Amino acid sequence: MNTAHAARRGAIAALIALTFLVSACGLLPTGGPVVKQEVKAGSENTEQTYFYPPGPSKGDSRSEIVKGFLVAMQANPINFGPARSFLSAHARPGWKPDAGTIIYESSTIRMHGREVLVQLSDVHQLDASGLWESDGPRSLSLTFKVTRDHGQWRIDNPPSALMMRSSFFSSQYMQAGLYFFDDSDRVLVPETVYVPEGQLAASALVRGLLAGPTGSLAAVARSAFPSNTLLSPSVTVNDNGVAEVPLSEAVLTLTPDEREQALIQLSHTLTQVPGISRVRVTVNGTPLALKDGRTDIGPDEGAEFVPTGLGSTRDLLAIRDGKVVSMSGRTSTAVVGAFGRRGLALRSLALDRSGSRIVAVAQNGRVAFSGGVSAEHGRVDRIFGDGEDLLRPRIDLFGNVWLVDRTSTGAVVHVARGGSVRTVRVAGISGRQITSFAISPDGTRIVAGLAGDGAARVVVSIVERGPNGGVLDARSPLRLAVNAGDPAHRVGPIADVGWRTPTMLAVLSHPTADTSRVVYLMSDGSPVGSELGQPDTYQGVAGSLVVNADSGLSLMLLGDKGHLVRLDAAGKWDVMGASSLVAATYAD
Image (cartoon, rainbow, N blue to C red; front, top):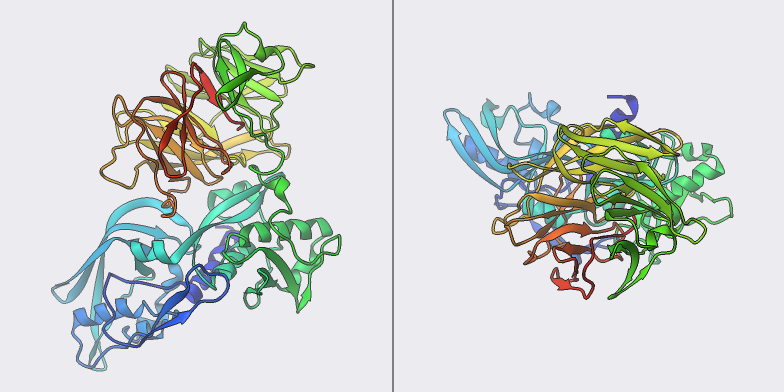
């Protein structure tokens, strides 16, 4: 672990110790006052339960001590004093509740000889940085050794972690993105974290942002803040929704351009918190000014760095009657340029985010073409002609064209750029049998649906680039199991994948021979927010997704008869009037 990663983990570990509210083993408090108080700005909850747990009672048995220890970790606001009182004098100094978080569905406690066993089911974990660890769910057994200490039973080997039920986690923690710049400084890249809802969320996000990106993301993203920048002491929010962020003097070393980048990171990160609309940084009580003299900034600033923001076309293109058309409701109009004229037999296409370039794959799956969408660019160029079975192409925000060929020996990934094509080894995808792939809107990740008879899975790999956006490598694959969160809904073989938000995937599968289902899946394997329900099963066969990370664009399917099917706000499917389409796409 390098110094930056260690600093990140240490900073957020300290934050967890200060802010995380804990629910342990589903045990109800057996004592201590419970008080409800109002929560002020920055929270969606109108009231919050405060609990002050008791310490151990004289004569408690071994199992009662363990039970009391777990209950004591539910102190709200956080106070580890009561929990430490259940530990032996030997164990107290070494107990590190900030080393990680264990999230579980249910638990049992029983005696085993002289030891107390706690069995947890459906376990997931957060690391010390508050990032989701994808391995799981699984069961976990904890063995507590309980020893005599001054005549009373006390725990001698407490696990260095917090423990909470999944219901508490989903109701009390918010999912948010820490926004960093990619290495080219062209786009904001989100890193998903979990923080307690309410007054402490903003400070939690700022400390995470100051610590910088971690894990595989650290290879492709950076923070504009100096590494030694500190929050002191916490974020406050005024009645106008302006978050004041007091930072250490390290930010004074930033150039004017770096200062603007840092505030853009802050505004896009903090305005996710309910009640915050703008952000102001202060140093020793003095507001930090931007180049134009402003001292606060909102999420509209820096929109050009958001891949789903300004400058991205919202056109919907399709292939119909041997040409590329622009769709508007039930009507279609041939695009300007060679792709809008008959003569090319095509089966799939991609549109760049400016709306000025199309890449399409021939009906035979062997050839890829590229051409402009204007009267001045009437020529179609052949950019690849040696494929076996090319999947739908993708164009990333740097203008690279991704072509994945499903060969007899597995997937081969090609990247076309500036008139040349090179093969790129993508860990977890190259050489595998895949059904579909997509590039994240920020260009930092490639996702693919894996083919096979086993459990439906997707793989996500990190894309490393040079300063000009050229692809260097793709590594650190993460395999994710696909399920709808509802045992009553079967998920079948994967037909297509796409990005519904900058961090969330849409996965199309066929549970049966005549039905289709779309499942949302977080790209880090963490749970999808409860406020976003999974779509209903579509009673028909859909061949592909029509999806974009822009929340203002409807998610659609392309049915087997060439008709579009739109997902409405209630999660129901509405068949559109358009039909006889071979393929359809938004801009990548």
